[in-house]
Image (cartoon, rainbow, N blue to C red; front, side, top):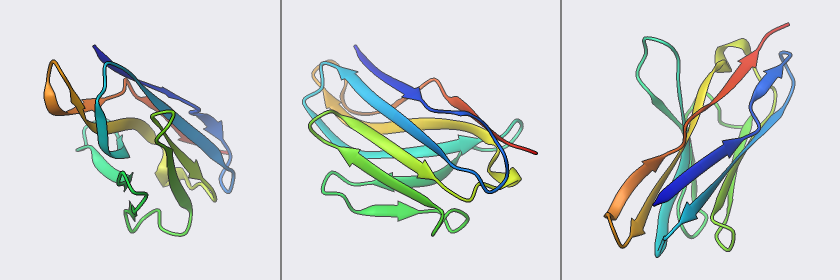
Amino acid sequence: QVHLEESGGGLVQPGGSLRLSCVASGTIFSISTMGWYRQAPGKQRELVARITSVGTPYYADSVKDRFTISRDNARSTVSLQMNDLKPEDTDVYYCNSYLYSPTTGWSDFWGQGTQVTVAS
């Protein structure tokens, strides 16, 4: 069984910072891309940032220069440092990982989501 566990969400004022973390656990042979998505009620889930196994990042235009994604391959973790947060960043944030497990082969896995609220 593969499990993604997120942490670090919460309430922050505009201009503030939060750091999200996600750890993948279970029987995992290899992890390819890891990333973060977000979703507001009634809207489609959208990509925020992702990072390849060799550390190449990609960011959505809306978060460039404010968010930084990083990963620790030895610990199977991915983090998202979010600075200069805006009210429009309020969403549920989901960790995603494309990985190889002996029971599923190469598959996408998702965390349960963590709420980020940016408000005065």
